[in-house]
Image 1 (tube, helix red, strand yellow):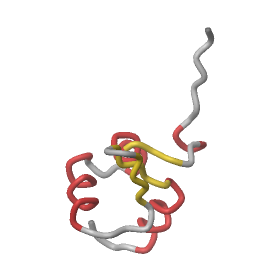
Image 2 (spheres, one colour):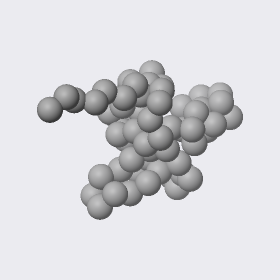
Image 3 (tube, helix red, strand yellow):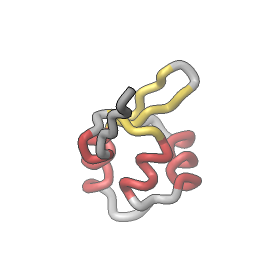
Image 4 (cartoon, one colour):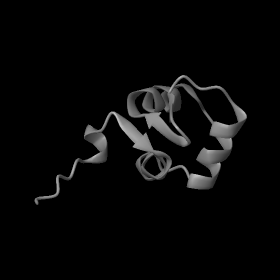
Length: 66
């Protein structure tokens, strides 16, 4: 069976690991921020935290420091 590979830039939802790699923010910093605040770009899938890529991009464009 052929494995389908989707580029991160083409995904709607990212894992925390993918979001960290995509944004350049360390995974530890990103996980800490996600625990601290209520963000509208987070989607909980059971115990797994998924990040809406476009929402994350929009948030990062609006802040000056993390």
